[in-house]
Length: 306
Image (tube, rainbow, N blue to C red; front, side, top):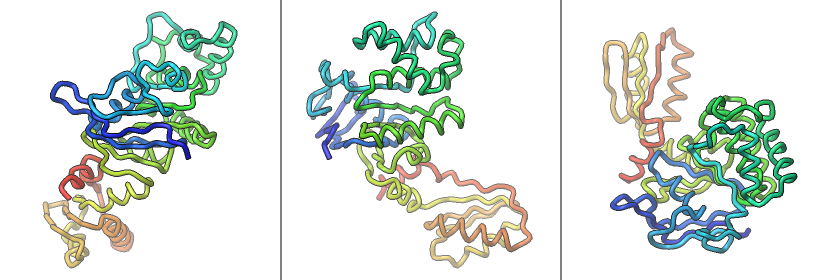
């Protein structure tokens, strides 16, 4: 399979801040998820691939060529940015139409394509309304419409689910998977593993501008499940709950309060399964179960210490 994006030793810094650090990465057609917390380097990598930034060191090639100031490459790319800034007093349709004209379409083609993509992203009913009246989710849809309008071979979606309602998310997941099935290359960034997993199995995990892990989404899930979890169970009989885990080899620590027990475990999957079974079998009131470690930042911190 041909490589669409290839980076070697890619670094980008702004003063003393290193945004991308010595990145080696190859991306093939299909859907790839860039996963990481804010500041991980996702957006900077995307802007390097778009030619908006030049590398501080190393190189990045898109379709075999440097993307910066390369119109042959850039004309094959669509981009839906994380943030938006629309012209004043412009409707959704006018925004997409004029973006098409700037790309090089004639008037008739720009009009037809603007109407088509507004329909694809389900905003036709509001496309003649001013963007200033749009909700955040509708602005997200119109950004996506302009990115799709040029029928790109490579599509960048930077945090595309922000602001979308559940129905809109499901529609976008389906669209992304469909584009990948057509042989398009889609790069989707997110800080939420669940979002990436709904769109693709191929994940690149970024932290502090470096690749922490890459591969199948199941491998990334295993990394999350491997790191120790601290679980607090607020219930009517915390000591009885603690007794169920006292002799487990995976139990690392147990602490009590008057109405809760906090257990640190090295095997969270087994812990939750055992807890669920016990709660169903015993007359026990459980008020809440919380786990501050069940997040990506905790995974990153754990992996960096290994």
